[in-house]
Length: 138
Image (cartoon, rainbow, N blue to C red):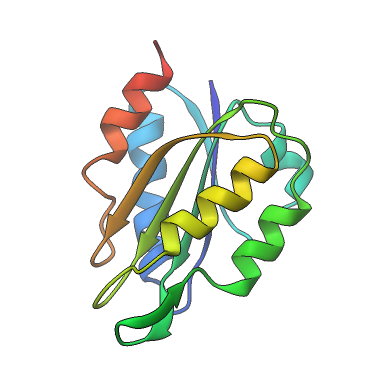
């Protein structure tokens, strides 16, 4: 299975989490690419068997949290996802607000089936990522 993990990282925290997810994915025997949304072709991401999209949580302390505009713009450039299994993840400092919901709804509008939502307070992969990856095999 080919898994594409894409992220928008402001300070490197989200990138580090994405890279850890990539390591977990490869260790499970899957082909995996890990790329910044600024450096990858949306068509390549759309062609993967499963996709994981991440953003750092932007906002003002505990209000107006959400994904970056660049993340939402990237999602809008993806091709049709037609039931493809997708996960969303965010890294955060204080709270995530509606970050995961906003990314998920944008992906569902492209036809994705959002089957995973993860958050991580720091540069580590969310603990729920590996179980999501195992469910892809079933």
